[in-house]
Image (cartoon, rainbow, N blue to C red; front, side):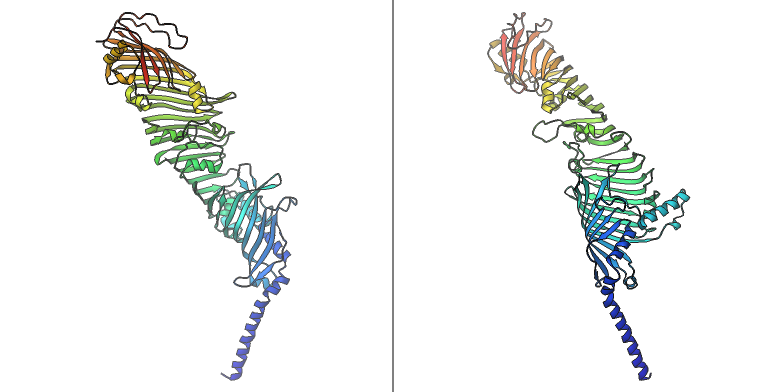
Length: 626
């Protein structure tokens, strides 16, 4: 090859390299003169649909990427000049196309918002959303997609969807605020994430993390047809929410039209319902709420109603199954349905819906019934095995209802203590205060096991019996219910034994006179033919209307009062041989008249002290039982 051709080739290559180097070196100068601030603002406005203003002068960087750095950027509604900006960012970094810049145009695929502030408004549905733009490529694409769906709702031609590019939007260290009375209230802080949406007719995804109410949260959203979704059509979506107090996920099909609906699989889990209620600020007192809770279900939701089918629930690792229905058509949300459990802690379950006294706390506290202002509830429950405090239940059928200030929990049928249990707990909010009513009917039960569960171990008939308790009183606090309740108590027992009574020793000590503790004659058991107790209750004091124990040779009777709040006793009683009529004495109190002389062979006595340490004082001498 001639040397002249070689020299020409070298010169051509050198000149080309020089031109490229000069073009690259001139990019910042070109950008600063031709890609002016107004041109970038116009392009961002056309892209976003908001009015974009840039207070600072753009700064152009060539390496490692060609980009413009903008300061003090705001995005506002075109139609509301006096309204605060929808988005404010201390800095916006825009990746630019070098070739477009050399031609005097602006083309970018990625925008990074540094320390943005996003203003949202409370929507009618209760959600906080930013104002929507009134124009821009995104809005035009959504309108065009809506036209495609309208042309053929059953089988739209998705090939006609707009294919305008969108790109990637990243945001770092942002915050979300809402305005009230001219002041900004922060909802979310440390907001970081990105939106990936290459083209309008392609898949889109959102990933974001932030701090909400003191907890780090993460949200992930993807959709294969986001433009169809935003235009009101049905599109597949996947959503997940993760935070320490709770996690939630949904995978299925959704529509954002006027007849919006969801159809798919949903999962929810919370390690502590108490913590979740406190964090969510739902206004429902957490009380002794359930510990861990998880729910997985097929969800179908539309027109203010959601159905949960094939629902699996786990409460404190107690699994259950059923179906639920959630309605928003009334003033308060309505939850109804049926749930079936293998095992269930009734106390912890109810504390999520009724003001059950907190477990594990030192003493009774105020009853909070504000939950009745938040929700209407109608649940049917069943459990093969259940616990209510120390009580073990089986084959439980129950209902939980909350409506119009009334909260009711009924056990319509359950097996316990070898018999059948029915109970009811009602909280009725009235203008003059909350009224609480408690009912219990225990039929054909083992009275000894029942008494042990109730904490009563002295002079309890052992055998088969039936117990009925009704209490009603003001429900300001748990201790005030017992102190001020009115009601009744009745019990009947069949053949068995009266444990904790050595009757010959009792008769002997009573004949000798002088005070003696019941514990001194408690080392025995008296076989009985039956027993019956009836008492009326007023302001926490039980007045014995009838209390008789029938043994083979003797009948024992009691009358007087017993306080189940202070646990004090003021009773008079007698032991009379079978076949001889008993003569109950006037009730023991400060105004009691002097007892009438006892009939022959009747041993009378007074019972005082308290339930834990009762003492006996003879009233008169009778015939010993020897």
